[in-house]
Length: 164
Ligand code: FES
Image 1 (cartoon, protein in one colour):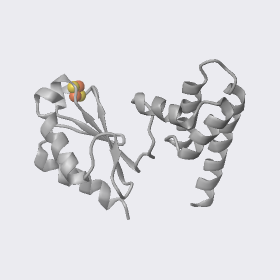
Image 2: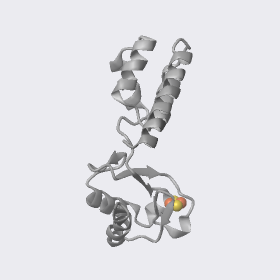
Image 3: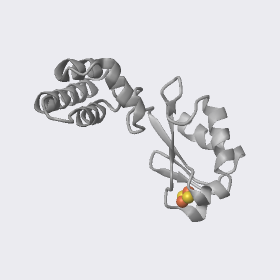
Image 4: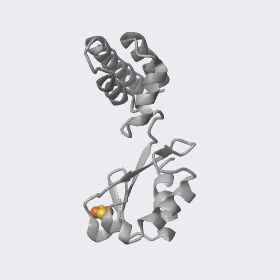
């Protein structure tokens, strides 16, 4: 980890720990604490679950239950590049399912999952707001519209080439 990243990480942990101390005795503090952990780390690491369990006296197994119940929480870090596939009505009608299949085949992972190399995370969204370009995906802040399954490989390659 580079020095700047290390400093940022330590600051994030500090913010989470402040929240942990401030909110530990609050009624219904579990969800805000999990949100704080996720805001700090980008996901909820095992260590954070251990901290929360110790501070709130909620068993770790129960905390896992809450995390897996709510779609907003992640137990794995996000990849370096976020791919959002739109599965809204216009995109659905224009072939979003086939785009999703092509993405899953290329990435080797499904929605809400990250590639083994940590380079891409695939997420599903309801509408990106570019319905006239459907079917649409976003990669980070870039919109790719009027897609066909055979274009997916090329789109992903653009980002893979930026890797080096
Ligand atoms: S439904 Fe996909 S961009 Fe609106």
